[in-house]
Image (tube, rainbow, N blue to C red):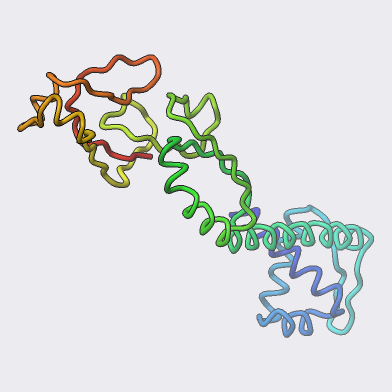
Length: 215
């Protein structure tokens, strides 16, 4: 808090030097002359030196005051630049996002979402990685990863379900004519089925629960 007060004191002191009087500086800043005088006194006390010599009719900037004024201009300029930069960043998000998405979903759905995002946030650079393999979010420096899964390993990462997908069993008419049409999903275990699994993972069964898209 003291640092903020001193920054304000530097701004007040600079106004006094530029205006040539406490009263004129107070009018510029929209405060009382007494408040301006008190602010300069706090700054002098903090720096341990006299910045201004003043009488009832005259004010003179000391050599220490001149040095303080020049440094104050540098400090205030950098502070104003920082505020402008942060305000601009808040108004227009920028930076780089590394995102991992499933291959099939990325090809079929993600393109339209990506176009809308880029139109809305043109200052953001996107690094999109498509694939169904497991990724280590922290080690591979991903900001966001979407996966089609019905379970996630224990993790300290934030996870949210976006939507649900249903798997559909399909068969060609010729196959059904030759092997018959199953009356219940349990009967699929007696049929020749092609089941999608991730690389390196065995097929745990033909009847799988609904799959959720999570990020």
